[in-house]
Amino acid sequence: MRHLLDTHTLDRETALRILDVAEDMSDTQSREIKKLPTLRGKTVVNLFFEDSTRTRISFEAAAKRLSADVINFAAKGSSVSKGESLKDTAQTLQAMGADAVVIRHSASGAPRTLATSGWISAGVVNAGDGTHEHPTQALLDAFTIRKRRCGTASRGRDLAGVRVVIVGDVLHSRVARSNVWLLTTLGADVTLVSPPTLVPQNVSQWPVRVLYDLDEALADGPDAVMMLRIQLERMNAAYFPSEREYSRTWGLDAVRAGSLPSDSIVMHPGPMNRGLEISSEAADSPRSTVLEQVTNGVSVRMAVLYMLLAGERDDERGRDL
Ligand code: CP
Image (cartoon, rainbow, N blue to C red; front, top):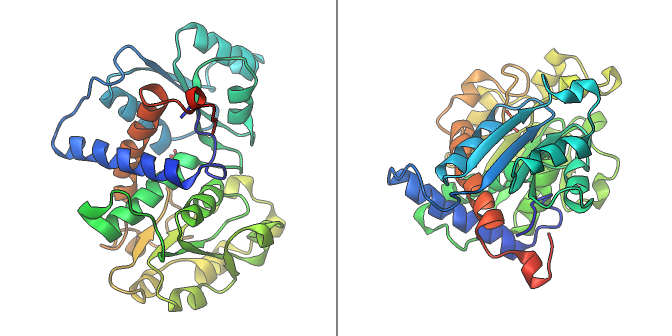
């Protein structure tokens, strides 16, 4: 694998390979093998132009557990504030020896530009770009769903027949987009539930069912309900009902969570707006996988870095992702 830029173009075989390698990584961590020597001598640069807690720290933890060196770059406090371009910033970090660049950027397409412009030779991982994609979030979500369903027999299994409901601010959500492509590639049935104003215009071209009524979607007894963060920072007032109305109509509270089958899980990529899209009772309930998703994120990111930096490279086989 040369780069990981999206899940839209990620084929089933490669997605399953990432999930299976993540299982191996998870096994080593559960056996309390804190560090593997696999990426000794490699350097991973975390290039974050937007804020992050989970993604940045888990990429750092993943790289360190594989014995790579890590350079953390945050745009705040850097020469970006003096007008330095993405190209010059990336080339500066490459000159310090980056083998892989993990980039989060507010501009959709920035990771692809970095990967295809020829500015740098390092492998590029998209850690979230604008409203476009967040592929490692979708991979850790798929990993979490598969692990809950199949336990120790997960390896090689896809998500055929699994019913996932994704709820909320789909319009602004790169998490929703990456999950739609990945989960359906793996065979899951995906339903989106959203206020009509927060559904993307081209949703009819997506391989999903769209509903506007959360209770109708929950009545089908889905296997997983994924709540999305309301992205108030990207919100136009015209799109959004009041917070009270949103929470009452599209929020997951204890009553709605309690109506699900006993083995259904409640997911959220974080950070959560407690009391808006999800109540504390639902977020902290035994069916919530919020913290499990964070733990699984480290294993999935270890797998991605391993496949980028130590695994077989697709470009050597004439294929690019
Ligand atoms: N889920 C997610 O991307 O969280 P962060 O913004 O904290 O990285």
